[in-house]
Length: 139
Image (cartoon, rainbow, N blue to C red):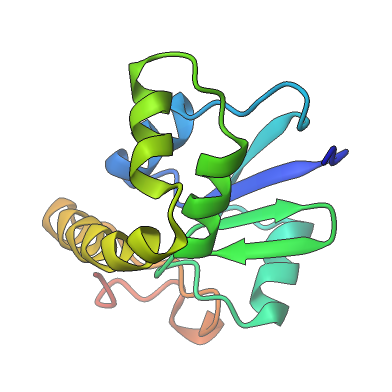
């Protein structure tokens, strides 16, 4: 299962998301993982928006032409992740099950959104571009 391009798109201003995405490693045989900042305009963000994925509610993993969103993204990352290191073994153990990923992801998103609200970070609002730059539209 080799993909030329594997993109992980998430909000780099979220400390929890950023820590997770900087540490997760995928197997070399799968391909190279490239991190994309969801707050920056990019072709993949345009594709994500066209697919109707709310980046404020979940990360996106793009492998070739296939998109994985939210719990599916974290589940897929676990399946293609390296087992090297404590974090990657723990990540695999936690999210290798699709059912467990579906159960764990919503509370993770709740705490992520709470953290961003506490930090005063604004939403990305990729599905509502007219709200993008409004100061009062925070998490």
